[in-house]
Image (tube, rainbow, N blue to C red; front, side, top):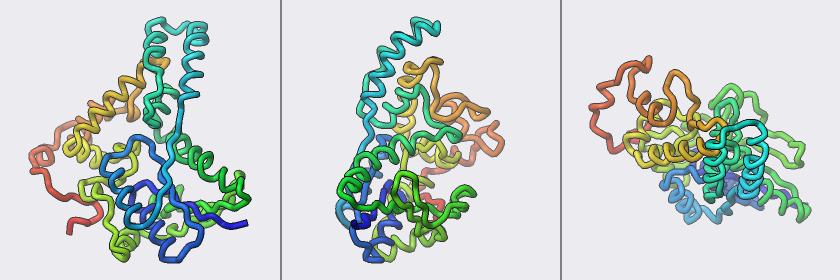
Length: 300
């Protein structure tokens, strides 16, 4: 029985530093995986290709929700009518419930909603399950053991600060978190040590670069996205329309509706406001678009 060390990369700073750390330690039986969720920026796909060219092969996996969507069509056609859902909503759902091949969008059509901070099913459905099914299972079938490396840092949140470096799972694999006590500067130092450029989105105002946007994106990131990548905003607005049609409520928003607004268009307008969210921040809105902007000091 061999230990197979599996690293899941996202194109972000932490998973890249994790891979470099494994290389630095001459880790044997290393397998690197990229779960394509279909909500990444084109620059992230290019960056994953760059990492593969510089560091070694990457296995790409994708979730497929075709069967779930087909089952939902059957459910809509029968149970929704029994529940008294309006015929208009039923017909809208049946019209739109066809797999697109975009994992994130198909997941949300199946669920009839987008993930939220209190119901963050995206990571499990788009990364954990497909990696387990498409990567871990074949390793188990070969009689080997999976060591799942995670680039989690305690500095990121209170919940992560409580995590242990090594954890055994009920599914039979071991989780290893060697970067737990690293800070963000250690992460970028690791890039420098190996001469690996960080994802270019970190120099374009992004704090996180997996999904574009992430449901946990901060106000500053949303402002940068809307002024640098308006096409990504338009894509999410279209996804809201599609998922709304697949929803029993006839409505679905990428970000939770609250005092920031309802729907991507209103959230984008909120990102342009000053503290308090009531008035536009004229300083921000009149600022010339900087060629480089980094919350991590990468432009200095």
